[in-house]
Length: 243
Image (cartoon, rainbow, N blue to C red; front, side, top):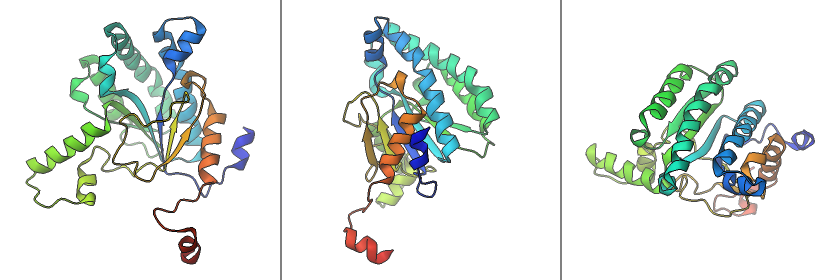
């Protein structure tokens, strides 16, 4: 909690995105099966969700399952989908209690029926909530998002192409671009996540494996974000003049 004392509540990112990485390596270090790494990651999901809501973050996006993850061994994918269903059902009371709205981005149609139904039921149950919006990126990739947007533009008969128009057709059309991306486990890449939306996102990489990620680690990431100067292509001098 000490790190939280250094966080400026007037300079919070509206939208924080997280690549939750390291479950498999955590399991390997513990000498257990990979699926147990995913199961132990639920605590981290709860901590970062609660921590973000407590700080006043408006949007939190968790990269839960990418389009590339289907290439993993079938038993692991099946285990992940079973865990997804259980976790969503188990966490509904917490979402309701904390006024958190659940939504998702990605191609839901390819999810197993029970996973899709659990997700859609939880989204419907929390759609009137006015607190933080928790966005699960499921069967999602940045390239899929852009291609899907262009396809929908063509179907809609759009003839003029522009950045603002493309943004309106992305799965995140009603969500502000993330100001901060957190990736755990020491990997330094964005792995096909929110490619269009992260044009000016601040990146924070930590060696902490996702199952071990806690509120103090979230606070460290946000404190790091607040020490940075966000110039958006301008110079520091220009920003000072504008201020």
